[in-house]
Every structure is written in C-alpha cells, then in structure tokens.
Image (cartoon, rainbow, N blue to C red; front, side, top):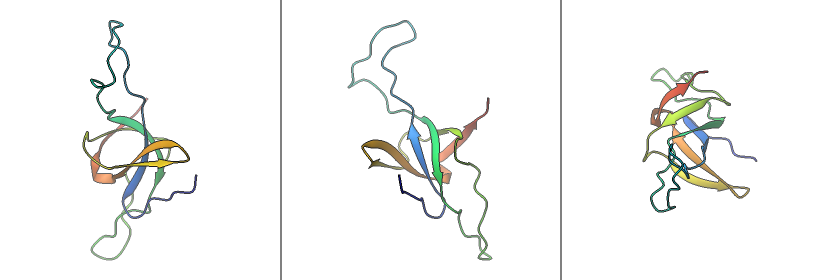
Length: 96
C-alpha cells in the first residue's frame, strides 16, 4: 500500500464488525454497528502550529485506538477498507 496521510490525519484499519452477541446470538448485518476501534496503519506529519512548527502526533503506527462513530472518511485501498481520520477524531489509545 502506498498511502501517506497528510497533516494531522491518521489511517486506521477498523476492527471487524461484531457478528455475535456475548451470549452467542448472531446479529443481522443491518443491525451491526460500525466499529469504533481499530489499528493505526499510517500517520501524517502532524498539524502546523501558530509558529510554523509541526506539532507531534499523539498516536503512532501499530496503536490500537477508539475513534468517533461518525468521524473520518471511508477509503478502499487494495480491496481493503480503511478509515481516514483527523487526529482529533481519535479519543483514546488502548494500552495493553
């Protein structure tokens, strides 16, 4: 893949949709919610500050993150679905 996010944008591979409930019931495809969790695949250089210097990004490639339900744009690269988000749309990094 050759996709490099610009500025403060982040490319995320969404986690697979939940197909079963915790009790083992299958969820119909129409009732499955969009995942709000995923893995950071690529990170832009960061937003420019008022003084013209790049501000560091809070996430890095490989981080597992939670992001906003309606944030970002869906993109397809090499047949795979990704989400292109602004860094502000990422709410938390999941630490092991």
